[in-house]
Structure formats: structure tokens, C-alpha cells
Image 1 (tube, chains in turn brown, purple, blue, red):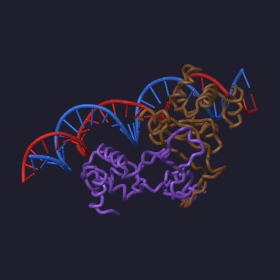
Image 2 (cartoon, helix red, strand yellow):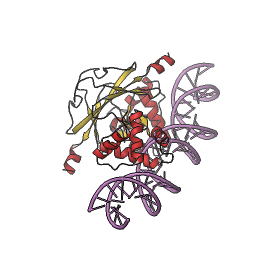
Image 3 (cartoon, chains in turn red, purple, blue, green):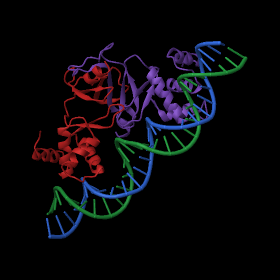
Image 4 (cartoon, chains in turn orange, blue, brown, yellow):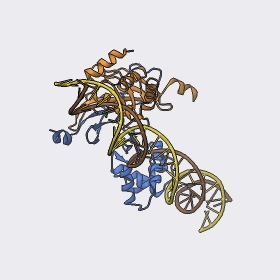
Length: 142
Length: 142
DNA sequence: AAGTTTTCTTGACTCGTTCAAGAGACGGGT
DNA sequence: ACCCGTCTCTTGAACGAGTCAAGAAAACTT
């Protein structure tokens, strides 16, 4: 888990002002992979009791724009955030409970970027979501 | 474009009652790939002037559940529907304007279903979204 | 330390989607 | 051909994640 000074370093490196809410949000996302905004707000309020939800929304947007965190949003889910960026990994999502786990890209380095016919689009990312059921849900419903 | 009788056939085949709203919605989705709910409502109202939006929401859910249409929802987009089902194709989405185009699966038949480490999940579908910019947006922003 | 700009607080608001209750339509059985 | 049980549609209200806007407060610059 990065120390506070590391988090500040990251912010400065991205040319973002260092503020308490930003450090706290960045730490929350590092600690809590795939957390939704509400969880982040909760986590952050453990550190700064009275941050506004708006501040957290703003910070999450700023960090996402700077590439310090990544935003993912599978269908039927609210926005979720993770600090693991820049390695082109993917996700498995449970259809029943919404649980998310990381999946390394099966193909190799920057692989998925190849579409058969791209319709003239300039593609910069391939997002893969594997849909299924997690072990817990598979067992519960037998 | 399937005739009305074909659409009715599809509904019966899926053990769904045949109603005017259902036929109209099914036709609208066939005519209008990647349409959002609002567009579908508009299209359907050209045929049945006073369907409630709720009816359309209900029908879209029923058709999706029956596998007659597919629901997709890229991040930052409302729900969209398409009638092309069962062929494991994917989508390119424009980051600027949200335009969507179909992309055939590059790898082969039921390919993408292979994740490196599935964390115990039982995977039944691999959804791929290619992110980029469409020709129009690429040109406009030069 | 003062000034400039960015960020945070407060509070209202939007909009896609869902909930709930009752009226109406579908279709299997007589 | 009709009736009846069930499913579907109408109406109208509600929900909730996220956004907008204006002013107060904090961060960096010099």
C-alpha cells in the first residue's frame, strides 16, 4: 500500500494539486479495488469526516482523467474504480451478485487491440468483460 | 426486415404472448440496431400512438430475458438494444459521440470465452468493447 | 504575505429506470 | 363462441446515481 508521500508524489506527477480529499480518495481506491463511489465516500470519511460527496465525485473524475485510477462500469452496475492502471487487464463479473475479479489479458501484451473490421474507428483500448457466476453464487443456487 | 408474422412467430417460439406493443418493439429493435429506450419508444409510438413508456420498458426486459434481443450498455451510455443475437459479435464505441458499430469476433467461433485465470467463476460470455473515435469525430477535432 | 486559480461545500436538480395498483387484453378450456 | 385465469399494459409516483451552479476555502506562484 503506497505511503501518503507516495500518493502525493503521484498527484504532483500528474500535475494535480495535492489536497487532503485527493490523497484520501487515491488511498481509498488503492486499498479497495473495484469500489463504487459510495464505498469510496465511506472510506474517505473515515479520514476526513465531512467531505462532501461532490468533492469525491470531482476527485474521482480528476484522478480518472489524469490516468491515476481507472473507471469501470459493467452493465447494471454503478461506476467502480481501481488503481491498477496501464497493464491492460480485464474483469470477470458475477451475474448474480456483481462481484468483480481481475483477469490478466490472455493473449499477451497489447493484443486485444485488433478488431477484424474497425469501421474506420481509431481504436485505443479493448475492454473485455467476462460474464458468469462466482463460486459463492454457483454453490448457493446449486 | 422480418414481416409481422415472423415477429409473431418469434414471440410464440419464445413462449411469450403476442401483443401489439411486443410486435412493435421487436420490429423497432430489428429496424434500429443499438437504439436506446427512448428511440424505441419513439419508433413504437409511430405504430401505436399511446403506448406507455413503462410498457416499452417491460417489453424490452421480456424480450431480453427470452433472448430475442440483446441489451448492451457501454459505460457512460444508457441501455441500448439490438436484434442480432447468438453470434458472439462485439462493438466499437466512439468516446466522443457514443456511436456504436458491430465488430465480428476476430478470434473465431466461441473464442473469447477463455480467460487466463477465472478465479473460480463459471464464465458464459465474453463481452468485448473497443473504445476509440469514429471517423466523423476524428475529422472534426482534426 | 498577497494574489490568482483551482478545488471544495452546499443544496438543488436531472433523467433513466423502477415500483405499485388496478384496468385491460391474451389464449386455453369448456 | 365464450369465459375465466393469468399475464400485460396504463397511470402516476418514486428512486438514486450522478450533475449543475454559486460562493467559500484552500493550494500554489512570486
